[in-house]
Amino acid sequence: MRDGRARGRARPGVFVDSRRRRSAALAVTLGCAALTVTLTAACASSGSAGSAALTPTGTAAQAPGPATSSATSTAATQGDATQESSDPPAASDPAVTSSAESASAATPPPVAVTGTALRGKVIAIDPGHNGANFRHVAQINRLVQIGNGSKACDTTGTETDAGYAEATFTFDVSTRLAALLRAQGATVVLTRSDNHGVGPCITERAAVGNRAHADAAISIHGDGAPASGYGFHVIVPHGIGSNDAIVAPSRRLGTDVRDAFHADAGEPLSTYTGTRTGALVARDDLGGLNLSEVPKVFIECGNMRNAADARRMTSATWRQRAAAALAAGLVRYLTGR
Ligand SMILES: [Zn+2]
Image 1: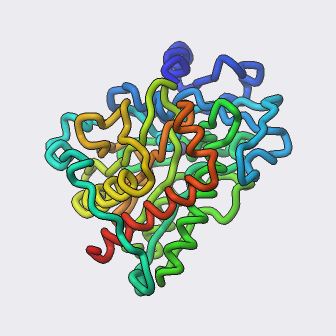
Image 2: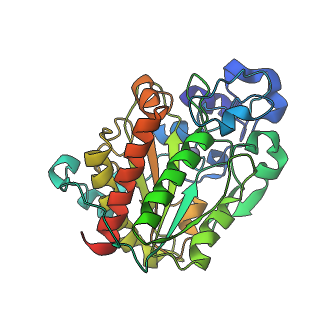
Image 3: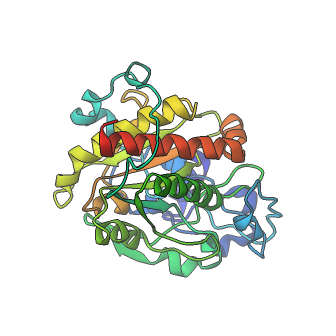
């Protein structure tokens, strides 16, 4: 995605994967374009190259397993959730830096998620992107206000080199996570109910958790960083004033999710961002965090452009393990267990 970003600079706001330039008209404007912060590796991560090349019928987006994208139509590009991207001011954020204890040292024992641990708790889950976004470019490119600027309503998300779409991954993990949380008594709300629609906009993704008065909210993504990087990272809000009240609890949520995901999903900490902050990255360019009124974090579960991460992320067995790890992190945050 770094390449994509560089190309994007020549054509501000538009990032097209060179491998799929034939449909340049469908190029999606990356959230990165609206950023005011310094663009570094993560934009790549997000913005990157990840064009969501799916089959014209969208079957790839709905397939539970690795999608077999023919890549014959597409090409909306961009990154990830973080579509909204850019490397965060992580290293310069004292709060985050101070909490950057070694994840391995901070790793708690596995949390036993049993019974009614989450009874009375409300959890909002946001499966990043949506399976048909790439066919509705104008709709998802529409700019929306995110509290400190504007950004695209949504993006297509990235994909693995084999064509397994991020939107498919996020919906699958979210569905598994929702089932695990409900089994423990939680009330769960999701920002979308299937993987063949469009959006919703990042503003609505935040509003879903707000309306539900969620005790915790999490947005699930897969990154599209340069192939050499691997591992996961958790993104926490960097206060912009209006969301200052959720900064501290979100950092606690992020720490619990980070620790549980590292211990229980077996995924390494990111090697390409948040390396000095224990894979916790603070950002103020994500609408989903800027507009949230409830404790919220994003997780980039892995780099879909990295071969080892892609193998894990396309495995249903690993996705279940990832969902269980996320559930453990939420239980720890919500119950102290
Ligand atoms: Zn994403």
